[in-house]
Image (cartoon, rainbow over all chains, first blue to last red; front, side, top):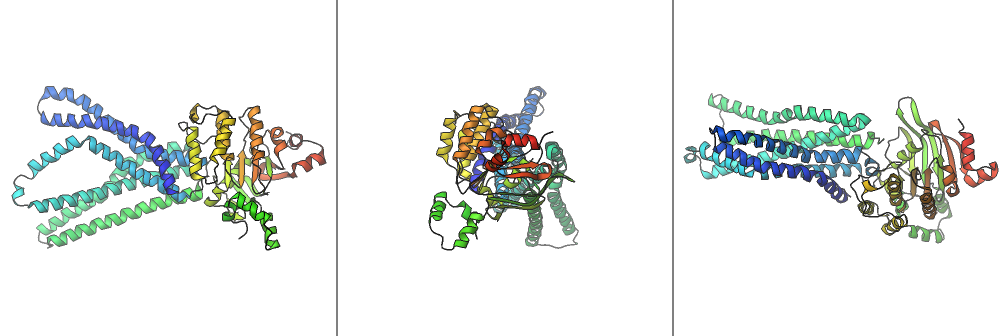
Length: 277
Length: 267
């Protein structure tokens, strides 16, 4: 049954998602070109003036497009579980856990796809920025660092960032699912208003909360480097990597536990408390 | 176990053949026959504290019967159907379907028609048919297409372009095209024209099977009266004031159910 649920969830979510994705892509392409152009013409006031207005338009287009594409999964979740479609959803011979899992997989896919579209649209600018950083930031140090070390470090950074990105998407998806479920179950006819308020609060405070593990990790590394420099702690590169690895593992365990808790609470609310009226 | 969910899900033909075959154990045959399709025991439900819609409600529906659940507005008829179909969670009591406690699996046994449309406007009628065919193994696509053709509904039409009555007809076609054990129809004739009402009633009667049951709630008693085998007059709080065989009551009282309803619930 999960396959059938996924089929219809993908189909229905896509109907709204593609509009946001298209707006996002069509805005990101000129935006990256404009940023590239501005960076090349720094100091040229006359060209800067005519570039700012279209840049703002494109930026707003990217934000609006991303919001539509990201929120399309939550619109589907709300409509299917708390809208008029709920009469059909909960009379299907499908377990509520399966319905929820299908929504979660769909949300992860479309959220990642939304970011992928944005990255694709901004590829021109990002490529330029990376090359520019590589050209200036590593000049002189390339003699000290071997190419192999650089590649390894880059790969570790990419893997850690991808993992962090995936966990952030998963956590935000489950947080929003939980909010919709909680408001749908307890606020009934005011659920939509409650969801909007809660979404705003989560977007505002949640973005800071999600930065905490990363900031904590960075502070820990800086603190440790300080301790090593002051000869208070002595540590080899291998021990350093092990410590960073342990820290990352701790974050992964904590975030996984939080993901599981949110999924469990949403499922329990759907199974035991939901009254479609 | 007698009357289990799996037994209820077995093909009708196979069941009919089983009925024709002499039973090995006469006692087990009696038990199968006596297991009601739906049994509500001490069912309680309230939306607000100290204002129960259903209180210790008991109700049984036997196989092979079309039962009319009749009562004034707000007496809990729709609430009962929603509880049985799993849309609402009961505060207390038990719901047994084919002898088994209600669960998500039981949804395969029930074909429920709510009193409001549940499809999104952008969907086509044909995609709704595919949706039902995908999720309900007992859905008869040919029957559904024939019924749509009889009612003059274009399968390619989008839901938003249909009138209120046509939307209801489409949902009724979907619900009645299943080979379910229990059909629960909440106000099936509400927004439908009189000509279509006759067709819908014919469909409901035509769907008669000795191993399935139909529960109808409606205010249009005179329209459905001819189709009903049993009836139950339901009052506020889920009290059953009067119930039994429709024919027997008509003979005994010398009145139609519609007249009797007006007398019992006179304001």
